[in-house]
Amino acid sequence: MTVPMGVEEEFHIVDVETRMLAARAHEVLDGLPDRGFTTEFLQSAVETNSGVHTSLDSLHADLARSRRTLVDAAAPLGLAVVAAGTAPLARMGSVDVTPDPRYLRMADEYRTVADEQLICGVQFHVDVPDRDTAVRAMCLVSPWLPTLLALSASSPFCLGADTGYASWRTMLWQRWPTSGPAACFGSAAAYDAAVARLIRSGVITDAGMVYYDIRPSAHQPTLELRVCDACPRVETAVMIAGLFRALVVDACGTVRRFSGCPHSLQPWLRAMTWRAARSGLEGRLVDPVTGLERPACAVVRSLLARLRPTLEEFGDWETVSALAEQTLGLGDVAHRLRRVAADGGLTAAVDFLIARTRANPAVIGPRARIDGRSLSARCRKTRAARLAAHRSGALLRRTSRIRGRTDRTTAADGQFYAGNGDPTTATVLPAPLERR
Image 1 (tube, rainbow, N blue to C red):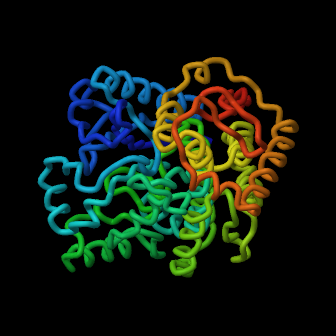
Image 2: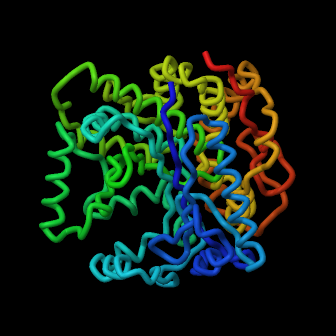
């Protein structure tokens, strides 16, 4: 089976001296190729667009290459790039809107809602047979989107403060009038008619401002996932791309077999999204099957089990399942950022994100194989230590005493690691499987 996919990644531009968000995207873009790199709404962000890929290996290589090109363009300017939902250090009102007529009109209309969008996400595209199938499939995929958000959560800090959320970007993004879970539609015509009514209402000016968590692309035969925070590690983006493709393929198969329009669960989905944004992988998520709370790791593994046949058909199972288990073991980026900030302050948190955003060329070559048994044991041990720290309040006390920068970080199990990065940086994709 061959189903093409693509990814759009957004990156913050930060000053390497101050670690503050910098409105200098135009300078970075001046040193980049015209193709594959573009502006964003605010001048503190740059977007990269991958090519079209049918394998996770080629997608990974493409994303890593784009990141290195972007990093190399920013470095001579005294700038760095950060892939995360929010940049920890920023000031409201310090970033200009990109001087495009559409963006300027949006800034004037939405005022503070537009000003506060100092955020970055990552969008995933998966090919679908036709637009009718896309519209009906998105309702079937939607219940699992909060799980994908939890896997990407990377924005606990905003404007120099801890928000208490794993993905504060989600809370900011949901202030747009058309953001959040998509309603269910029986056909592309019904969806397009709803969008046309929104435009006629004057609330939005064009179809591009329909910011649903998932939507049919206006320009390509794809379904587009928009719910995720930007991912510091390129491997996280690759993992979510594999999961989303399998979700879309399964949903399209269901649409082919059954007629009718699924019942809309939008109010429930919004609550599920809030839970994922609040807790990430460190607490509980709402299980899409039962509607009840379950530990995040159990919901993620339930999704993996559900998608295993399709992932195996694409040859993605070993890569995606190993990366998912690895993510559960490490915890979400929000948790790790708080741990780094507790030891070294928010400047260390920014340094952590800068280091994670740089693509490691070693992972593009021969893959090292992850030992699933030892990884699972480490996941259980690490998670138990994190939960114990949360119950005792130790993590909150440490976070509240952010002090001067140090040259080491402390894991939840109390071990020290050199540098201000993640103690488990020896992370590579598993060896690719032969197609089954």
